[in-house]
Length: 318
Length: 109
Length: 118
Figure 1 (tube, chains in turn green, yellow, brown):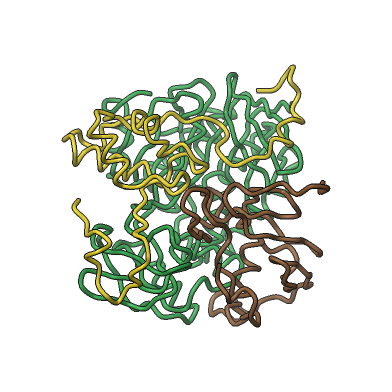
Figure 2 (cartoon, rainbow over the protein chains, first blue to last red; figure 1 turned 30 degrees about the horizontal axis):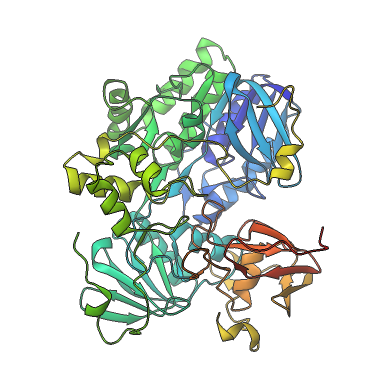
C-alpha cells in the first residue's frame, strides 16, 4: 500500500494538468495511466491542435508535440511518480485504488483521488457489428497512429458528426478510401463469413473490409461509480457521468473528477478543469484557486457551464 | 425498431450467413433476447442485466448500455436518459487473478 | 477460420510513411508464432497490431456462437481480441506487447489450459 497526497488516474490532457498542478504546490502525487506513454487522446487524435492551454505552462501546438512536452514537464518533479502501463481497476472505501500492471498488483491510498479517466467511444449495435473489421473510431485511430498499422483499406464510417469528420480526415491522410458514410445505426448492416466483406446502407451494398463506428465519445466515469458517486445522464456532457462542481468535487469526499470523464469537452476545457481539480485536491491557496477558476470560466462554453451547474438539480442518484 | 429477418436479406449476401444481431458483444446477447426481457417486465438497466447478462461482461456495459436504454425507452416509454446506470463493480479492466493474489489481505481492498 | 492465416503474410498494411507522423522508426524485429506459423513483429508492439500487420484480423471464436471476433475497441475495454498467449488464456492482445519467441493461439470459446505449461 502506497500513501500519497493526491492520486491522478488517467494521463491524458486533464490528468496531466491535474498532476502538474498538484505537484507544483508540493503535494506528493502519483499519476497512473494504462497506456505505455502518457498523453491520452493527444496520441491517437493526431489532428488535434492545442490552441488554448487552459492555464498550463506549455506552448500551443500539435497534440503530439504537446504530449511530449508535457511528459518532459512531468519528469521534472521529484514529488511526482508516474506509473504507465498500469491499470486502476477499482476504487474502494477510503479511496483506496487497486492497481495492476499484469505482472503485479498494489494499492494506493491517497488523501484525494482525481479521476481523469477520459472517454470511451459511443457504440450502438447493428446487425453484423461483431464481425472482425468493424471497430470503434478510437481503435482505427490507435492502430493507425500509435501502432502504425492499417486495420483496413476500404472503409465505411457510421456517424455524421465531428468525430466522423475527424476520422475521415485521418483515414484519408493514411491513404485509404472512405467509400460511404451513414448517419443512422438503424439503417446499416455488416456482413461477411469470418470477417467483414460487405456493408449495406439502406438499399445500397458496398464492398468494404473495415467499418468504423464514429458516433462520438462518452464520459468514462466507471471508477466514480465504484465509489457510489451520484450520477446522471446528461446529453450535453456526452452521456452518463457523475455529479460534481466546477472544481471536480463529486458527492464522495476526496473523490474528484475532471476532463472528458466528467463530460466530453474541448482540449482547453479539460485542461483547465484538470488544473483546477489538481489545485483543489492538493489544497492550494485561495489565490491560486481563484486564478485557475477564472481561466476555466473564460475557456468553458456556456453549454458546458450550464450542464455542470444543472447537474445537482437533476437526474438520478445511484 | 423492426428489422428484416435473414430470409429477407438481399441476394448479394451469403445466404448461409447468420444475422449477427447482438446487443451485448461480450456475452453474445441478441436484440431479440433483450426485447423479450423488457417485454417480461425488466424495465431498468440493472433488471435487463440480471435477466439477460447484457452488460455483465468484460466491457462492463460501456458498449451496450445505451442500446439497452434506447430499447427500454422504445418499448416502455421511459426516457433512456432518466435511467440509472448499471451498478459498476470492480474490476474496471480485465485483470489476472494472479496479480490480485499478490495483494495484501490485511490492508488490501 | 480464415485460410489466409497460412498463406504468405501480407505486410502491406504497415504504415511506413505518414504525412503527420513522418517515417516509421526502425525497430528490432522479433519472431512470434501464431497458430504454428512463424511471423515477424516489431519489438514491443501490441500482439493485435503485429497480427494486423501480417494480415490477420481474427483473434478468437466466441463461446456460444463460435463466431469470429477481432479488434473492436482497440484499447483494452472489450473482450473481442482475447487470445491464448504462451498458454495463458484471455490475453487482451490490443494492449499486450509482443516479445521474441511468443506463442499466440486463436482462442476457441473460453479456451483450454494446456497440460505441462506454466
